[in-house]
Length: 441
Ligand code: TRP
Image 1: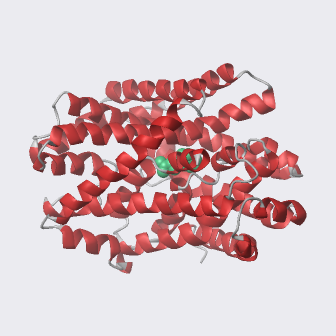
Image 2 (image 1 turned 180 degrees about the vertical axis):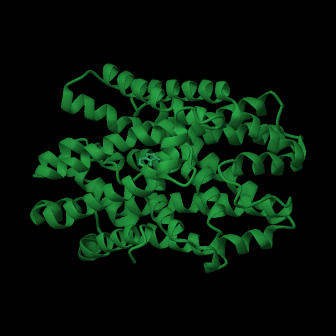
């Protein structure tokens, strides 16, 4: 139970409520959602079971796990994960900082009641303010480091037991509210209607990347959590439960948001500001809007915090296991590096300080923030996932693998299917999407 909760805490985060709706909007809805769901079921789920299994079988964090299980050169996959954790958390923390800022605005009554015309400028002002972005980024990183130092087990797990269901409950209230809006039918059709005409190569790549991002896969976060798992815990049903919960939350968030977007004639492809603009508008229509707004953004911060903790824990446990550092030294160093690495992302809302030329070379006019997200989610995570799948399916000793899979589960019949997926479907699918993205197929 503690494990499922911690893993679900890692999976459920900004990816579900901020990123999924916004990239669904940018990619035109329905067809993107369908591809995303296929990626979750056929790629995400088996890779999640593989990651947890590698962690439990080795009782180590990523780099040590590959070494212990006879990895040789596969250790590179572990290193890739550590690097990827730094990259993701550096901008993740900036967005979590926006949620902190919105919590503050809600508590002080500065956001609800502004109406559709007033809310947009509030987000733009935040987006373009270097000082606000920097300040909240640092505050969020301090919170994350504090949790890592306090030990993940005690405080935060108890809170997660209460706050995560509350977040889900609040999303359902927002969904019920959206249901009464004029734009509900249009919003529903946008999310579930099959609009292939809007789908691009980049969109397909993004759907795969997001399947990894939202389930916290491909960089050893689930592997690290798996190393805290006991022998009598069931890997298979835990993986299914985590994925189902995560997907349910993302879909609920989208179904709650898009009717608001359409009702107020806003642009579904507006980008990263989507949730920060639509939620305050919807809440200002509801009784007790200020209160709900404060609760919503506070819960969003909390969801982001349990995810950020898992991102920082990978680097921290690497430094502890491999370099023999104390937890304190490891967490402060890794956290400090991320604070610095996040500065360009925090500043890129305004004038892209050092970003402009680099960003322009890498992606079509992306700033630092987008560039980090693009590289990490769309390329590094699927690449890491590919490594994990190939290692588990083709390299890991079958005796070890089979025993590890069977321990604690009564779903042993899925072993063959799982292995088949890891051996062929996952590598084939990921390669195909990579080739498609660079225009080969
Ligand atoms: N899954 C989290 C979210 O959806 C983000 C996250 C936490 C993550 N840990 C991760 C993403 C590890 C990739 C890898 O917000």
